[in-house]
Image (tube, rainbow, N blue to C red; front, top):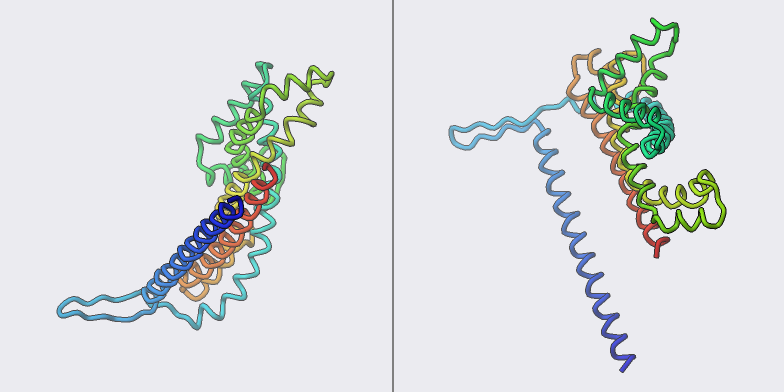
Length: 276
């Protein structure tokens, strides 16, 4: 009887796996159809149906092939800019979250003011502000460091809510048990709360990094950071082919987003298995 029920359970599992694989196959087919339609829209073809004439977008593919290796040079700067900013933003987010959970009035006021100010102003304004304002205080930063500072402060404010939720997600009983064992609040936070909170925080941080990867393009407005967007705009202006150059930039951003989304899903599955 046990063998029969086991076989039946295995059969149901195989059916579910087969259905999942079939569904994924259909999704891939539709992805191909949508991508093919998009390529057709960019083919420059002219279609006439009776009196109606439809003109698709015409690109200079020779120009695209020529500038693609040049624009690709901005990938490293884009990744370094985003990776450095997300690391600094994570530290700021953790400190801000701890301050917001603090009972010290000054720390709570400082953290809430910081979050309110950053969330209430556009990221582009913050990038330009730090680049123009800091030199008047005698602090000279190049465009790259100004961009990292602005991105870090911006995302640190938003990510602080994620960190706060992660810290509060650790059970109150575990905190009380740690204190009962003689741990200080600092030891409890380092040894009990933060390791568990990080498991909650890491998946949303992946989304924040992907968003920052795209938002880092705003730093190119300063004109001195040679990231993907800078190379795209520079090559487009030279030959008056901005649309084609921006298409190459878009493909690179999209490709990186797909890769990091896949890596994030793998990490989430691994963390989920570790919780069982």
